[in-house]
Length: 76
Image 1 (cartoon, rainbow, N blue to C red):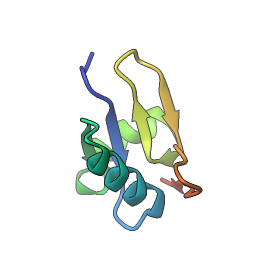
Image 2 (image 1 turned 30 degrees about the horizontal axis):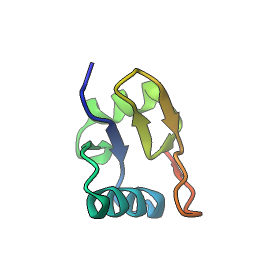
Image 3 (image 1 turned 90 degrees about the vertical axis):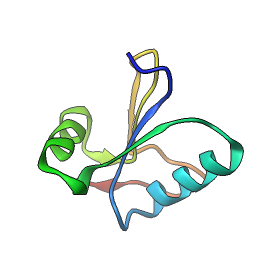
Image 4 (image 1 turned 180 degrees about the horizontal axis):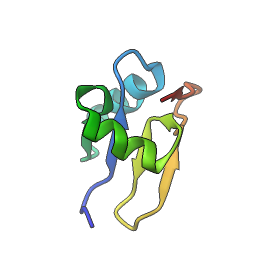
């Protein structure tokens, strides 16, 4: 299991951008996986949920369509 949250994102998703920018600004460590960059990563993301951003927390909990600051996720 990862020591930091894994965040699946796609280009053009406002909620993904808001989350990545917010956590980066706050110094929160995470691993970003861009789902549109490969079929394998997209398949991983789709196995975990139907909306990005998908956050896989270190304890194994999964939040798909993670909403932050009023920005809502995008279907994949």
